[in-house]
Length: 70
Image (cartoon, rainbow, N blue to C red):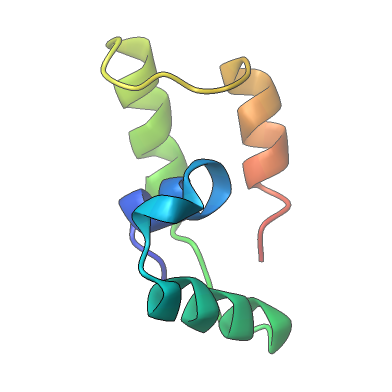
């Protein structure tokens, strides 16, 4: 299960992850072994609403994209 920060970095700032972490996530996605907790989506929504997290799109668009993740 991916941590919220790792998920955000993987989607929006992969350079913040080590090469090994990026490769591990990629392998896990390819084998359908990685998951994201629903609480991560909630955490992003709350932080965004409080102005503590800037997203590259609207929250609604980000949510639509993020929920296509395995």
